[in-house]
Image (cartoon, rainbow, N blue to C red; front, side, top):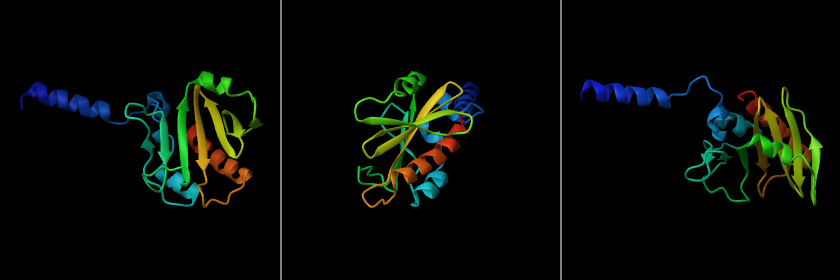
Length: 159
């Protein structure tokens, strides 16, 4: 291998290494939370976050299996455009809006029926955290919101 090939390979390797930029600078929703944080919050061991879509990394699902079915206990983290935070900050139709507290960030819960999602904006970045308790989950809406708030606080610390 000649020197220019070695230099190119080193440059590519360095570019691929994580730097000091925040997780959201790259839109990597899977970097906002760790497997340990999600496992502890859900009470089950989850796999590393799985990005949805082949070319998109703005949605990340943490679940115990790679199945990701609606009946499975899981957590979904979505990096969203900041404008969506403002647009979603209006209850309409069957949805309800409730203030949420995330240190150093703006936050609210948007609830449709039994599904609640915490929306967070910090430093001009926005993301959502939604817990699906799964078919065997027994958490109340207040308990789900507490779990979402806790994880949103950890994620906000990385923004």
